[in-house]
Image 1: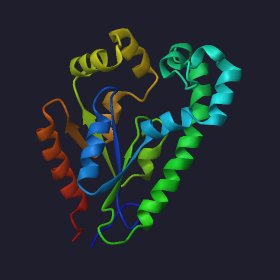
Image 2: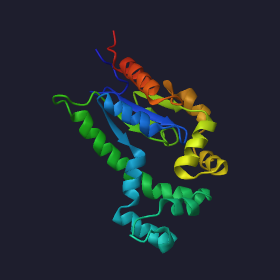
Image 3: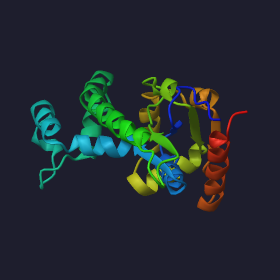
Length: 212
């Protein structure tokens, strides 16, 4: 018998971690093991490119935050917004309610799916999981743990970030040490993908194990 914290038909697993820790990679591995994964970063990117959000950004930040093809230049938005806490809060207020609405719609569909070969669990890839209190809605929380030097190297290679940029972004988020303390599982993602996949399989097996 399964006894999830929130009496759902399937467990909801929160996946969080530091910037550059590979949360999306871990989430994809959960998907490969039969979980439906809701990636909040991907949803945020979709919301950012929606017509209504573009109109808000044009009135707020001007044409300079748009690419030649009319898409939003995320790097330019970040440069203008994340240096100021009030501006960051305004952007979050524009994006997060829309992401949350879409996330809940997807979750309802996944939890209602009892059909053949269906979903065994629902994973939430949410960078701000603790910061916005969504950890309280999860049956289990996984913290993807990667040492800062490795995360910084990945961010330099993939996004062109400096150490100062990483520090600035992390100061706007829930402290990493507290995330790790509050999580149910800490998963090391600093090695190769095969090692991380084995950890994903072990953790998922524990979460899905029947209660006695």
